[in-house]
Each structure stands twice: as structure tokens, then as C-alpha cells.
Length: 517
Image 1: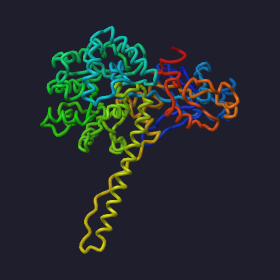
Image 2: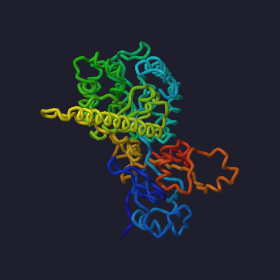
Image 3: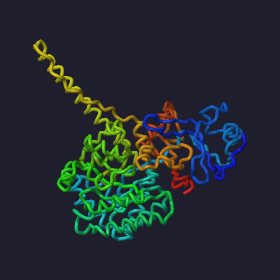
């Protein structure tokens, strides 16, 4: 077979354990070992099992040069990469796709982890709006955004869907910071022209004009890494005129849209009062052309059956933000039902309503929320069955036709690890309409990846017990033992790991954390 003559040759080949999602229904693929080839442009050329060269799996970290050549010969024959391009992962290391955060407020990072004593609407007025108003100061914005984006990226978020503030200059600064640090992002200048504090509100005309200016600013960067996203904060803070114009702008320029929906019962009631002619919260956005196949709606906890059907019909997606949903006591989203109904769902940190900037936290809390929903649905089914049985016993022997029995309530299984990981990666990419670019290691996609290390020294239990070093603080929160498989090491990272386990990060092939940075 002749070597490739591609104008973009393979410049890096990673060999070791590779884990990624093949889709909600198709589960996880473990390549142990696998080989991932990346071109000079940062595009994935191949992702496949390492060709069988008769090599022991447990020796991959200590292969001799001639063994490397033998194992990779079939791929070298096609792609003509140099030996120097090959990097071998050590035991305990593996590649996973970068995380996708589908909902995060960059300016709110400055007060994350505080002020979680109030429900949504009161929380906005007491904590959020005063802090966001400070971003009128460009120097403050630059400092705060650099720290917020660095923290997000360091936690493995290679793609983020950011809210900025109403300030045009600060929003431009966020774009510059994201590009400097190398993250991929949707960034939105927030729109708020009513029902906002006097110190933090725009006129309708200024809000629209500066939104156009911001979109133009991003377009002038001519980079696929940053996309402007229209950001009406939520329906109560935007006039019908402004939402109409934003809907027209979205249609004219094919721009994505992000907002909030059905997060809190008080919010829903307020929307009903502001838009009495609308049959639902979702219908308000739809009326103004803001529910499209490029729309990301955060929360959606209390959406009705009709509203979920409307979102699905429009192709709109939901960002599930379980940390915030718990922290602000907004409710528990039934993710299983949404997935069963065919809605696109991804995960969001929702900093600072969510107090943690890592998608690993969102992953864990999404699993917990689904277990709460599963337990609640089983209890409802048991109660229904008990009532049905009692009614049947009471009516036994009674002449006449039997009364119709109500249908049993559905039971909603909890999310599996594979499903939650899909939400954190490929599912999030689908929510943002980026599934052709990122989300897993399919050839042709950009190499957005995390190199995870859960501990290169796997020691026997008796050796641990016999050494004084066993009492020293470990460098990260994951311990690996001889019985651990590739699969359990991956699980331990998801449920126990943190940014210390993410030793290298790549966005479109560029190393933005690790040895080369």
C-alpha cells in the first residue's frame, strides 16, 4: 500500500488507552491500546486499535524501538509519519475528548462558591447583577476573565458556551482572552433592556446595536474557535421589541442563541404575567424566532410535555445544570425523560449558580440527579400499584363492569456512566451544533483532547502497607490498585478525579496545558 500524499501529513501519533463516546445508544469505545493520529492542522487523521503485532498489552509503556516500528507499520505505510511523531502513554494514562460546558457565566466566576442562600430571582438581584455591573471596568474585566477562562480550561473544558455581561468592551475582552488561552467557545454579549436594576440595564437600541457590533468583532477574528451567540438573558429582562430584533438577526446571520427557560417556579409565573397571551414560556421564545436548531436553553426543569415537544420540533437543545439546580433549590431535571423524547441535552456548570467550574462535577451531579428521579419514580410506581391492588380487592365480588384502571406512572432509569460521559462530551457538542468538529475522536474532527493520568505507579497493596511513603499525601485524588482495569481507572477518574489528573490539554491540536505550554 502506498504512503499517503495528503497535503496535511500526520505530525503526532498517540499510542495507549483511548476512551470516547460513540453516541447515546452506542456507548463507550475503549481502545486499549489504540492509536490516534493528528495532522499539522490539528485534525484527527485516524483513531483505531493498535494493529496486532503480537505485543503484550502490559508492555506498551516499555516497547523497544523495533517493536514500535513493527506495531505501527500498517499505519506508517498509509500515513508516512516519522518515528519521532509517536508518543506512548504510560500505564494509568488515557486520552478522552475535551469536555463541553454548554452553559457558563464567565463574569460570575468572581463570586462562585458564595451566596447560595437564595432562590433564583432574589439571588440575581442580591449577588449577580451587582457583580456583573463591575465589568464596565475594562481592566477589571480583563483580570477576571483571564482567571475564569484559565480555570475552566484547566478543568478540561475545551469548548464552552459563555455568557458575558451587557458591556460591549468587556465582551470583546472575553473573546480576546479565550483566543489567547486557546479555548473553543461560543460567547454572547448579554441583552437586558427591562426589569433590571438602574445601574445594570441597556436601552433597546443600544442593546441591539452593540450586539451587532460584537458579532462583527468576532467575525473579524476569522477563527473557527470563537462564535458569537445571541444572548437574551431571559424573557423577563428583554422587551418584545428587542427579542423580535434578535430573532431577525439570528435568522439573517444564522447565529446561535442561548437563554434560560423554566428554571424556577417564580420565574415561570413572572413570564406568565409579562406575556399573558402566550400559552407557555417556550412559546414566548418561539413567537420571537428564538427557538431554532441553534438554540441552547439552560435548565428546562419544569417544561411541560407540550413545551418539550415544541423544543424538539424546533431542534432546540437543553443545557442540564444540576449543580445550580440543586444549589438554588430550583428543582431536579428529569434527564431520562428528555433523552427518551429525543431532545438534545448536554451538561453545563452554570457558574456561579453552580458553584464548581468543572464538568466532572456536572457529570457527577447529573448522575445523582438522575438517581433521585429514578428513586422517586419507583416510589410513585409502588404507590400506584398498592392503590390499584387495594381498589381491586375492595371491588372484588362487586357486580357490574370493572372500573378502568389508571395507567401506571413511568419508571425512569438513572443515567449510566456511559450516558453521562456522552452528555459531557459528544452530547454537549451536539447541543452546540459542533458534533462534526468535536465531541469524540472520529477521523476528520478536531483533536480536542485531555490526557488523563490516574497514577503511573500501580503498586501492590502489601508494598503500600510496608512503606512509610504510603502516609504521604498523594499528588492527586485517585488511587489505582493491581485489580483495576482500564475501565475502572476511567471510572475512578470520572467520579474521583479533578484537574490534577488532567496533565495535558489539546484544542484543535494545539497543546494549551502540559509539557508544551
